[in-house]
Image 1 (cartoon, rainbow, N blue to C red):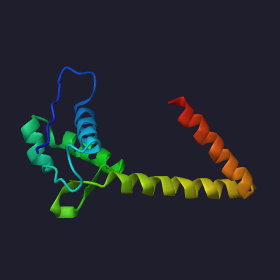
Image 2 (cartoon, rainbow, N blue to C red; image 1 turned 135 degrees about the horizontal axis):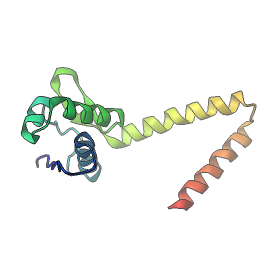
Image 3 (tube, rainbow, N blue to C red; image 1 turned 45 degrees about the vertical axis):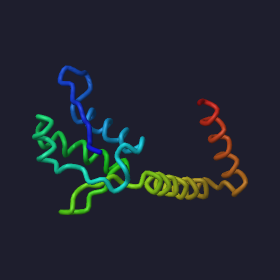
Image 4 (cartoon, rainbow, N blue to C red; image 1 turned 135 degrees about the vertical axis):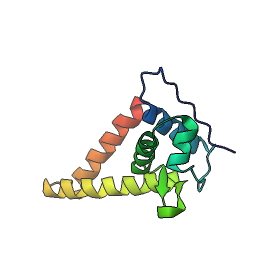
Length: 125
């Protein structure tokens, strides 16, 4: 198993975004398993023929999205996506609960608003 990234220089999509999207897709699909160690920024940039800052920007975006985690000098690894998604959802829920409370909504009204929003979003699919 190896990281397979192709950057198309003539694409309208920026190179860092091409790298970010391909790594994210491979992590989501399981082609890159949780714990897979990504190449170093410099080494990967050299391999792809890109500037190190371009690869670093892609890695930072992936880390912000919870797709990868950087462990200092140990490197950058594919993160457990479910953990990141659950953590982000919990943070959003807390922020919503605090906002609903500040607005004076009781639990029933706050839950009703969430249920309505979920129904609308999941029916869009």
